[in-house]
Amino acid sequence: MRKLGLLIASLFLLSCGDKDNSEPPAPLTKIEQALRVVVDWKTNTGAGIETASYNMRPLLVQDQIFSVDTRGLVKSIDTESGKVNWSTETGMAAITGLAGTAAVIIASSRDGDLNAYDILEDDLELRWSTRLKGEIRALPLIAGEQVFVRTVDGQLSALSLIDGSIQWTISRRVPALSLTGNSQPVVRGDLVIAGFDDGKISAFSRADGQTVWETTVSRPTGRTEIERLVDLDGQFILRDGIIYISSYQGRLAAIQAIDGNLLWSRKFSSYQSIVADQDALYLSSDNSHIWSIDRRTGSAFWKQEALHARKITAPLLIDDKLVVADLEGYVHWLDKSDGALRGRVRPTSSRYIAQPLVWDNRIMVIDSEGILSSLYLKKPR
Image (tube, rainbow, N blue to C red; front, side, top):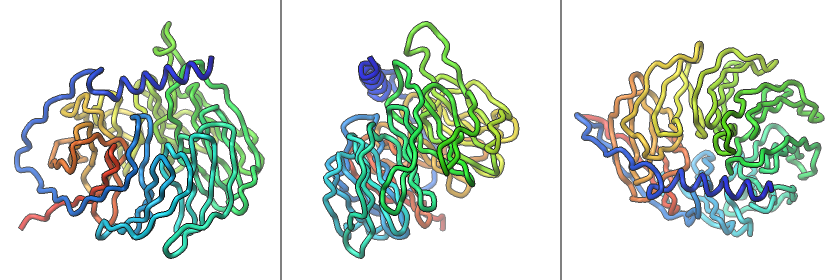
């Protein structure tokens, strides 16, 4: 029944992501005095995706971008020129991107395989390989000498970064129907914090996996299984000791990381990542409206509806701008102070799913065909 529920959820997500089966995207309007956006280079990484529920976001490490395709081919790409430095086969049936540091890369697969590779000058060298019981759709998290991994079967595991041995595993019940993604855990001191498909967020001891606290962000409501979806799949963030987290068909909340106490919450629906500055949270809702939310109170500073139903990515915050990409290959710049659209470019005609990246004031975006583009704003004369 659980497998059937996951299958139905996958079909549901596909219907959300397919422009032929959903609300028509809002037409784009002219931007007055638009910023000039330049496409610096484009590279075919080969990391195309089969479904909108895959998120093959590249890994940015210093002056290299690492991509992985669904057959496990890893490429190292120079951020300055877009040229491929080298590539290597891992054999991993990847359905999410790579995690890593300047020294090590973690690759995962739909089969629960987890491989750690040392980064060499022009190749990768296998450090260890471990198999978990569930499909891996969330990026592993490296923290010190530990790796934390969420799997779709409701488990959170801690592994040694040194040899891949499993230190502990905890399990949470997965509802009969859930979305296909998972959020990456976050670490604060001796705690590792993870969100689950039942609308709860929990903190565990990094040492032994014991539950330290648990808080309900959203409770299921409605009569149908689809109406009762409250997955915490959007990437939550930790800022100044406070967790900001959103749920699908649920709520946006601020929670104290030390004890799980709820500071505020408001009705909201999103399965996208959150970004923040000193004053505000910025996030895309499930209907592709972009919001700026007061970090202190949860009240809205502004909402931008011009990209309604365009299936936009999570926003990237760079200086005083926000950047999102959409289902028709457009990348949009917005003013973070009021949400006004300030610029637009169309590097490709394919959908963007992964959140944009930033390197040295350049924006890196990868589309569903695996085309990686480098963009920058042209300074006015």
